[in-house]
Image 1 (tube, rainbow, N blue to C red):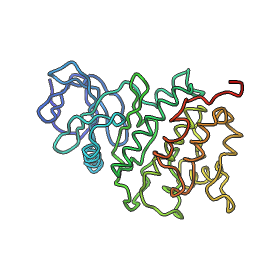
Image 2: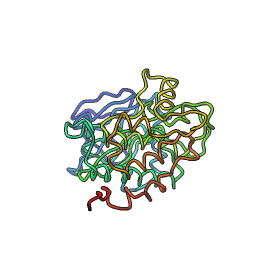
Image 3: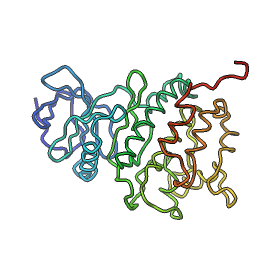
Image 4: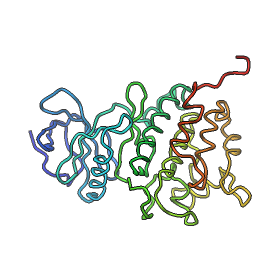
Length: 301
């Protein structure tokens, strides 16, 4: 078997081996590739278990060190991807393996037009529990999106991919969030630009909206900051009299979000322009959708 000794390229073949620390792992298959890294399904030589190994390009060593450091800060939590080991240069990260991402789940035919309420409850509540934990650890993920949410067989979520994460309160440097999920403060120079956990809440709400309606709420005409900001301001009816916006236009275009008042309440607290007025993960977990039954009682019950 050929042993991998560097991450200078991102493409490796099944059967090749990766030494990380005192363990050696055999590549089974590629799971996915992104801008910074490629993720492989691997098996350790000593057991039959499966792990995911993230192989990060050398030119993105800063992101590798950042993710490694963040995972060490976070430690173990039921809604954060398990961190197992890392190479000395942090270019190989050994992580817990999960078969499915939320992105893949949303593309499955039964869920293209939205998910059942109980499934939304389990998935979104576990994301919020993860975000609440990040907030307590003073970590901002800064790129919450379905691709970065792993699901176990019971649909409980694990947040992954911390390459863009920052410490809460850090001064703004660049927009780390994918446009469709970007909070307005990441693209609007008029809003104070410091990283806070409220950034992740806006992204979370965009995901919650998708799980209910089958649509993302803020898809820009073109993939630019200006177009994304214009889309958010238009969809939330931003004007001088209503600087934080409301969901009226979204309710009219996507009436499914009005079917469950408890979900609508969560969205109304999270899709707020000013991060100072936006609910926290703790605030949202205290809402009826998460602390009571997922479906509100019907009028005749």
